[in-house]
Image (cartoon, rainbow, N blue to C red):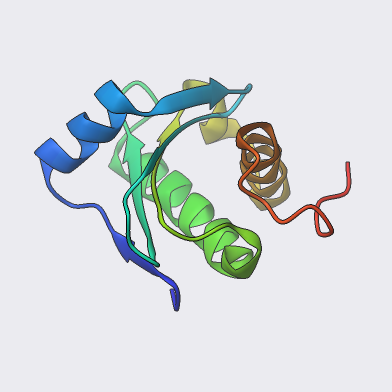
Length: 117
């Protein structure tokens, strides 16, 4: 990911959960908090409720890839935490991509000229 780094530590996730704002849809929950830098930091959380380790890793890869391909259309300077819901285990890439872009639109962090519903 060219413009982004990863959130890795528990306290980083917790800070975004407690101080950020969130929106959710059928497959994902997205928490957003401004970080004061020119880069985004993204964290992906998939709990055991979603499935076994193979399923959880697949969902993580789908979310990471859909963000990576659309990274340039997201505003900069944000900490983003994406939490996968249990329904995310049963869908493919295009549904995850659509859900991610939908949440970006709800948060107003996608450049306006890109998103089409």
